[in-house]
Image (cartoon, rainbow, N blue to C red):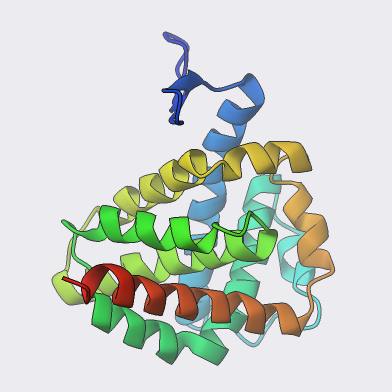
Amino acid sequence: MASDQGPGPLREGCGGASPLSEEEQQVVRDTEEVFQSYVYHRHQQDRGGTQGRVPRAHPTAHCCFLSSTLTQVGCQLAIIGDDINRRYGSDIEAMLQQLQPTADNAPDLFYKIACSLFKPGPTWGRVVALLAFGYRLALHVYQQHGLSGFLGKVTRLVVDSMLQLNVVRWIVEKGGWVAALDWAGTFRPIWTVVTAFAIVMVGQYVIRRFFKSS
């Protein structure tokens, strides 16, 4: 994370590590808040706290009353994530059962998923897919192994993967996380199908490529 005492985080690349711009450092910090907001609101939806009270055709209706812009972003993306879960949650859970993630193998597993997901290039749909997978991964490991504090590790995995795969730079070019509000405001249900399909297909590819080839 960025610090007042040093040059800030570095971006890994073929030519070695390079320092991030101030805008990229800000997006790195903002990504943590967005993901934490996403996780909070998805958890509330899973518990029935907001599910059914927000019109699915208007994902911004509930979130626009939140004070922080980044919290609004996380909230709106969580509503899309909830739609993904309703349609394809069982498929994603079956994928996780095959992958058998633990606290030890989660970093390698998560990066392989993220790398395959963003191979065609970043889109907001793929960003939501990564947040959705991060949430389900944290929930799965907690339910299977009861590891407290694992959510913080997943938050770092999300941030680090987006940094290494140049998604952070892409978000800067889009104008920051606030641009996701415009995208969420024009969200269409078909994007849920595409996003969820990406998660499941990438997961199956990783299973075949990295876990069943040895």
